[in-house]
Image (cartoon, rainbow, N blue to C red; front, side, top):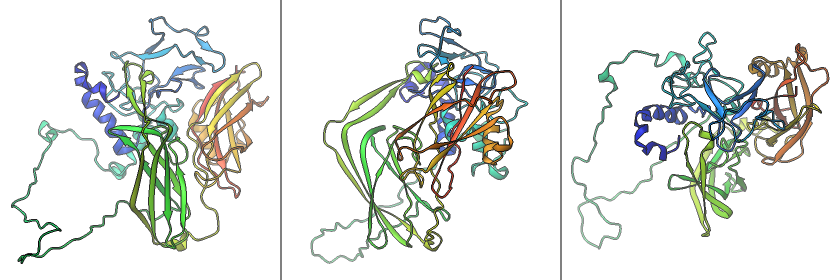
Length: 470
């Protein structure tokens, strides 16, 4: 639900639920659990063997229909190249009379939704849908929102347990602070005259953030015009180390590496050359390119968030901004000066299926390439794990993380060569192993991938993709 939507009078009762939705994003780091604009709102469920709509709780009820209200029914409404519904089909959940209670990160405008999704399999009303490719699943390793929230500092270790609150406890308390008396001010260009006053100037330094165990520093530049993100900018960061040696690097807004979301105006990069103790100074330079524009999203249909329209306003006037005065300190460089490579490739979070061929039993997979050290250079190769008849995709993550997949007969491993450097698209033509068929003769697959560098450091497993070749 976008910012303009909050101004509509009929939606006023939904404001409190939208506030919780937004608060969870900014406070606890969870993400939307519905389809995102520009992405396919459907996926193939390996558990149920059919195309489904992206949603947090599987048992949320709704209709797959066209804009004119006609129902989309398989197989006539299924695109054979993807195995999913055609683009003209949309899933519309029922706004009332639902049998579920979650999730606040999904369609929070639904009357019955009052909770976050969780892992309790005894409660189908709040059980998290682990296999759908929502942004939350892609970025949070397919964990439920409550699993992520409950491990934050606000709730970990039994903090802030649920309790019943009376009305008086829900009324916010405000305190107004103001100066108690006038203060005299002396301008720096004051004329020569006897003043019975003392003039002091001082620079206060505040520690914004401290990390005692990281082998790299994350750099972020947020480019906005008002409240709207500016995309397509050329953003450069120059780092001066304690010996005044300069390193200049490009920051990206491509949703890869340490950059969480593509096209949100936040440009990111990891700096890994932390070999000296002392102060590192950072300067950022921002300038517009030929394809620079401002994004402004407008939601026209609250039932289908992924159908929101995106308005682009080009910036034609030459624009240059420079940020100075930023720095960070390294105090334990002796732990970082080893020549041993300990930094793995970044996690792939946008693995997706471009096209399938049931006749040839193949699939074209695509993802944004990670780097050797997070988002620098290129990986040595990829490990691709494919599972068939996986009724719970978490098993695929669990088995491959424990390196026990050779013992698991339903999981196969492919070594995929690396072709491009960080930030470019990798494509791989995958063919189903002839012996990897489940007990019912179906070909329903779940696949994950990870990058591996030249010394064997492996990145985290990617998001899961699912499809059928039967």
